[in-house]
Image (cartoon, rainbow, N blue to C red):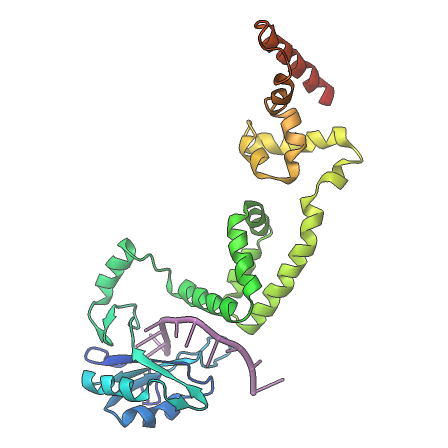
Length: 284
DNA sequence: GTTGAGCGTT
């Protein structure tokens, strides 16, 4: 949208787009127009706005008809003080439809760029990109711990699994591109998750009252996914203690094996087997 | 009235 009275992008065929960064959130196209028009014919000015709040997102696109004029505007206006902030003016790199742009001029059509994005840069969809950018920006500027936690989360499988099961991420997406509210929600939510994690994470209090029974629910869960139960047992740190005992007898014999006399004969294996056989029914 | 290191609208 521009204050030129047109809706949607005008003829972008022969225009040169400048990206104007760091403008105030209050700055409008009307404010920018006289400034940029001084250096050439401005075809259009567009300031992306937040869909939810309708507020400016802090940058603008100024389209010039001629490249040299655009270049001049970059030279003159880059670093200029506007509304109390030093704006940055540079040639846009991406077009409105994600076309590749060189010096503000589109050098690739949308179709081509699509082809490219498929093979080279797996650019997410429109909305995702929107959200992603917003998210990134926020985390950087506002809270580092959030950013770090995000990274941590990527590593910690347990955390990811839990959050997914609780459909936290879904909520995120559903809420979409909220800005302030989103942040607030996410913060409070994350805190609640933190407070909850110890309770959920440590099954020990649950198991302590009835250790014998605890095996049965575990068994009911494990055969469902994988009868071997290897991967879940290894991945979950909480269920570490109960699993090796009942499921994988190998872990234990290791300890008993080293002291045992291996030199004597094959009886050793028998001995170990006996141990296993005995131990399994005892636990169950 | 609110944020800030980034690339796009009916």
